Length: 388
Ligand code: NZQ
Ligand code: ZN
Image (cartoon, rainbow, N blue to C red; front, top):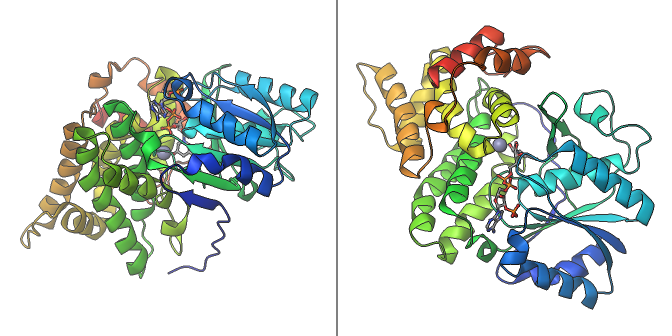
């Protein structure tokens, strides 16, 4: 196990009706005038907007609003949010939605007090010294942004999707009410779950040894998601299933599972190009990319892939042919994604092979991708081809 620091101060409030506490939570963390940030309308359609407003007003918190965050959130709206916060003096950003809304909120929080252009952070040209505080009411378990250090934004000029990470970006609080995820369409439930699993697997595939505790935590998180997603798909209002998935989504990406080990993150980089160029939902892209990445790299550390197959998918260990066991684990993962209704090939996503080279070039243009195996442009291209 490697040396590590773990500091995750996000205050989690979990359970039924917890969104009614949002006004008090904003106040507790210093917000007096908030920018209420949300997406394309689901929060109005399902009544969440009204409870948020009621709670803010009851707590005497002033608010201004910016809606319209799209999945794969765009830089232009972030810039608009920054302008609004500066002109209208917002001191807190409240994100009500999923990863896209939260990431857009984090970008606004970073850009508002900064003298230059917010894209500087996403290009590695600036480091945040101060940010506005962010609070979250989560409506979809998926990205884990509710307590992560990351924000991922798409720049429409050139269609670059890039991440910025800073400890300052962990939200002050995250309200997690699993009931809010009852209204998710099956596709969003499944794509969100694929992202949750990918966050665990990015950390699981490591060469660091003696990380048995975090291996076991990763395996249980994966097994929990695998068990409860089919239940949530069949019974969208099954609280217990939604609760298990929602908490797994936060645990998967709050960095506890990364303690003492080095994560990989190549599949995320490879997927972000798909989202940027084809506007694919992130989790749906990962369901295609992750198994292809696994097939490309498994020989690098066969034991780890055998362990994954046996412990996560109950594949029987083949003593005479461990490679077969490893490959069966990868196949089971693909089959699992398929059983939740997700595409598992680029073709199923209606993506041809005409832009694979361009995506591979963009993906590796800042240097090798991944840690478990370091991948160059040609490797990334091979992985896209394996995903065809
Ligand atoms: O916009 P609305 O109308 O709200 O609809 C949303 C959106 O269309 C809908 N939705 C959300 N909650 C709902 C609902 N529909 C019905 N009922 C509800 N309760 O779901 C759609 C997808 O929302 P989005 O926020 O895009 O989903 P997700 O949470 O998967 O976020 C994806 C984004 O997060 C980034 C991804 O790259 C992607 O841009 N990520 C952020 C990370 C981070 N900051 O740490 C890590 C991740 O790896 C990921 O890269
Ligand atoms: Zn992800």
